[in-house]
Length: 148
Image 1 (cartoon, rainbow, N blue to C red):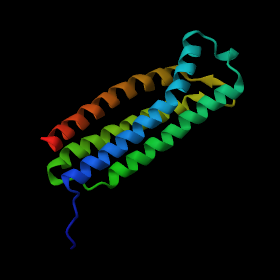
Image 2: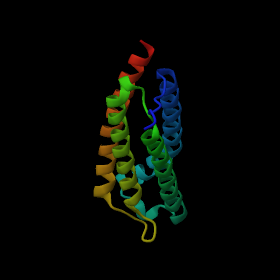
Image 3: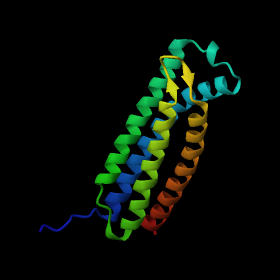
Image 4: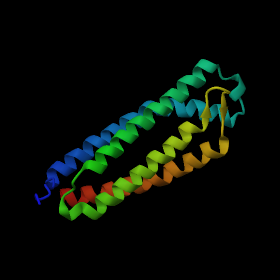
């Protein structure tokens, strides 16, 4: 049975940095679309939002889900250094949960009828906040150890 090849601590830190940058860029790109939709929903003006804009928002949400799913797959393929195996498992699970919550938000938008399942949308928003906080806390712990 071949020995499993683990990443070095430096390789692991660099990979996590790249993935975090991808997550940040995707979040920055979708943020204006989220804010636009959130404002429309808070002001109860969904019916006034042009269909093309609603479709554009929904498309951006779907695109970010795909990016997050790709990051999640990459995290699942990583063979973390032995000292980070437990922490890495938590990072993988938390980001998978975050990705699932993001998909719930994207799925809450019905392009055909230009409707939003507000309960799912708001629950997803809350869940994303919780999972991202947990994810970033775990990443900070890992980077504190990597740079120590």
